[in-house]
Amino acid sequence: MTYRMIVVALLVCAVGAVLVMKRGKPEAEPPSQTVPVPLAVATSNETQEAAKGEALPRLVDLGAGRCIPCKLMAPIIEELKQEYAGTFSIDFIDVWEHPEVGVPYGVRMIPTQIFYDAAGAELFRHEGFFSKEDILATWEEYGVDVLTRAGE
Image (tube, rainbow, N blue to C red; front, side, top):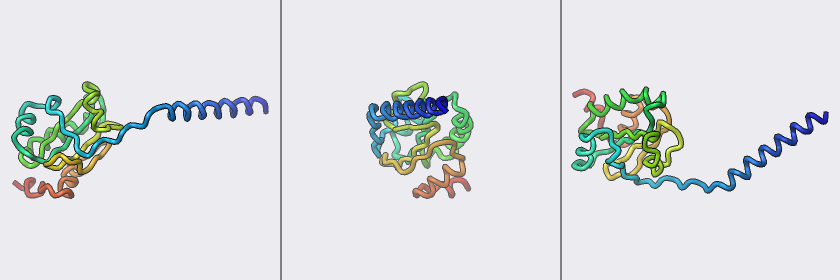
């Protein structure tokens, strides 16, 4: 009986300590709705040049080279870059290699995909693996015509 009371008391103290520690941390500010994509971290010079000259809708994929879902998405992202180059642009940012770059995006987990309109306003955000079909459906939902492009 005494043993159980000690265990319960320790659990209560542990929970209390966690709550006190959480209260001491300042809340993270939510990301602003318009976050410019840092071109210096874009995955290729072609993407950087296209981003400077054209106002296209943009998908920012934040992940890491060592993340399993990110690795599964890598070929999808590359395929989309090639197939839809004139329709929307895609940048991958490795937040393990460049953690400071992920901060303005308010990334809570990886991979995170953020969809922006041509003016740079955030349209939609998804966390976790996102299939090619789901990415294209999201673009279509926000008015980017990807269906006619697929038939070309």
